[in-house]
Length: 133
Image (tube, rainbow, N blue to C red; front, side, top):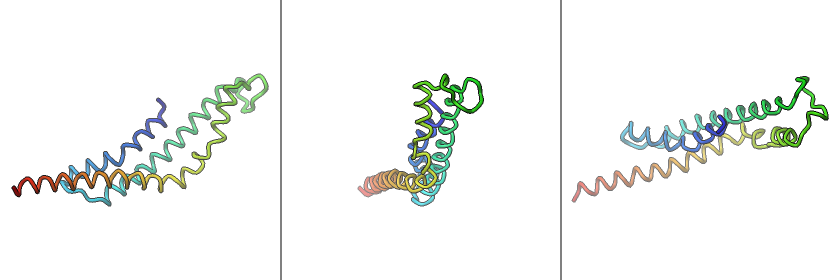
């Protein structure tokens, strides 16, 4: 598993971790602080993951440059080299990540934290209901 994949996995669980830890720490679930933390940290993770993935692909491509001149001669071009070159040059997701990272991360955080907030409310309502009996 590469570093960029690990960062992507952290991005997936980040809102839940921030929301739960904030809810447990405060004893009360407030939506905006975990939302802002998750969005900002998540955006940094997205940009970091993109940059690391880019450097991983460039490093793999450098392995095919046998004479280290920065140009691929006919003897250096293989099907695997073409694959890596295609992966490096044809990924618009990495290109647009600085623009789409915040909205996508904010939506992901809102969905996760909304579910967590609903769960905290249900648990607190259950505790309040059980003590009224």
